[in-house]
Length: 348
Image (cartoon, rainbow, N blue to C red; front, side, top):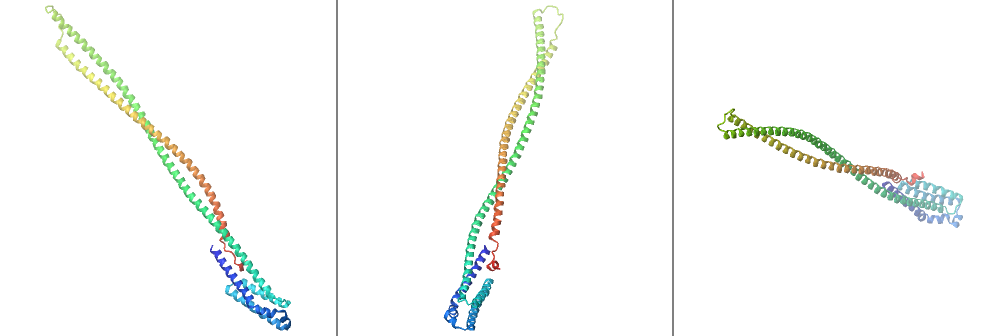
């Protein structure tokens, strides 16, 4: 508002100069006015004397105003001096009894006009100060809100992106678990199929060995019993007790081996089944946890996306309002900050 202050200062100086001019006219020309324009004395003077005194008074007033105009650098005072000179000369020519009344009127009118303009300028400044203050406050509020909502929007987008990356990671991990479980299911099925076949083979072989042992044991036992019951009977055929014992011993070893293999096969099956059940349970729990995590984070990301959309809409609204306020602020600046014309410039 420096331009306004400069204008106020210039107008105050001009008013001071005009007031000085008015006082000078009233104080310095009071005596001359009574002498020059007194009815009695003026009628008694000759035409030359009257003209001479009018010229002298005119000269003093005009010179005084011109000196003030020069001191104040006021074009208006120079113009006023010229108008006063013309008024007084015309008044003297026309026989006006008091031309200084016209001069005082000119000065008073000018002072009144300048005072009115000063009041208008004060009202204008008050209006500008009010609009500046309110507009500046609104701009600050909008800029703060825009900065705050921009930060919220950026954070919402960043957090949503992080959550979506985590969702993608969990989904990839879930897919790996599903694949791993499928492979485990397939392997377990193959293992169980082999176990069933192996068990059947071992049980069949063991059953055959045991049957053979039973047959041999019964045979050799019967032969031994018959020999004891009829020791004098003619021997038609003699059982090979030594060879039979060797066969039985061998079959008993085979029976033991088959039994051990069957037990080992069943133990291996139990261990494999237990490991499979444990892995399946772990995969099921891990899959459930990751699916729950995916559901929670996907919902959170969707909420952030919705919030980001709302923030963006709010920002658009705020930016529109800010643009309108800035446009109004530019108009206020154009109206309030353009340097006002001086009185001389307005009068020119």
